[in-house]
Image (cartoon, rainbow, N blue to C red; front, side, top):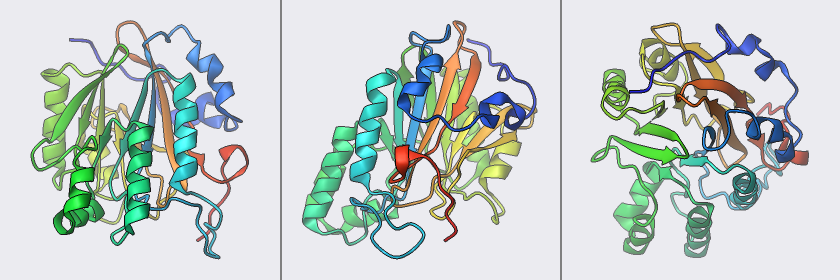
Length: 290
């Protein structure tokens, strides 16, 4: 079994140059990272979405979100990133359709989702409602790469040389940690990601508490619809090792991106964050006050 070590930069990652540097100005500036000694199957790009809520076009209201988001633009960016990053893991943490999405819009959304090439998707409340009420939608949704927490609590995927364990949302922190332990000890995963619906804060069980009580989880991808993170929060687990927590809001306004490089033994060696805002110049970040 491959050993797990802390990231090469000890202590708080927020104090390192990786997070202190200005955001990259585009995909091309990842070349240094992609061409590092840790490449050739040992580099992983994680992209993730949540609460797209059927938003195909940019937000059209007069709020602070006006002109941002829209999955048509997100899908183009996903394709562009995949064209330069060979090992890409694409995840969705639920509610990618709208509860009452019209037929044509629903079909367009599902087609874009399929073309984007998601590796795993969580069926949120919107998808569950569609499955229960519309046979045609149920048929289309069943063809997507769904991770059903009721029957399949986790899944193991291989990207290049990296073995990844992905845990479906669960109400209990103890349950999530039990699956993480199984993925570490029995499945020999070098990277363990928990898809979470616990919320970031203000609950008795939330992502920060999960991180603090965990031992084997590396990344927590949350789905708080109103929390837009420019960079993830880097917490510490019970062994004082780093756990990345990322939330990217709703309506396809932000595409979450985390790049990790591993050495030849499967140890994490370098980490870069670059959550991308859809609809701004070069997808760079602007402050949202809504």
